[in-house]
Length: 111
Image (tube, rainbow, N blue to C red):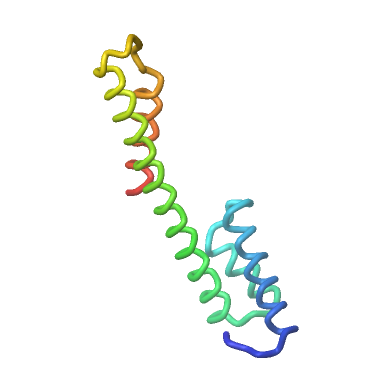
């Protein structure tokens, strides 16, 4: 879908934004989004290409978010545990609990 025409690029961007909004915000299935793109005048191949590209980008964004959750969760949990064992006079149960929950949420979402 490479073009040099700015108007064509703008139309392509609008179709991508339309499809992304349907997939992410309105929680439509890929089949429904393809059908709506075809109704807008796209060919079956172009509609499938747009939806497949967006699904790959959404999956990648979810994997990246899960990795960050795991990293930050582990840091909170380890930091809270280390400070608790350092005997500074407090038990950092909030950091340990929050970190553990965030780590396992990331672990579950990564699969």
